[in-house]
Image (cartoon, rainbow, N blue to C red; front, side, top):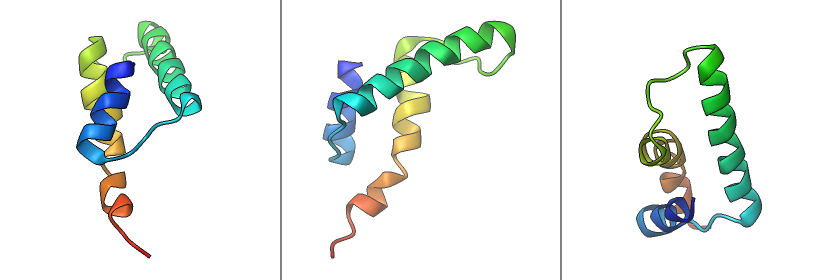
Length: 69
């Protein structure tokens, strides 16, 4: 998950707190657990989850982050 912190900061200019990182870690754990019960996603590789689920969902913050005032 340290890679997520680095990617979010490098690509989006956003700093994630430890609490936010813990939430992403919990979400990945739950996603994997529930995916065994219900077919939620075919994306299960850790790096793919990081990029295609987490980083993609955070990308919508970029326009908000660039708003000044």
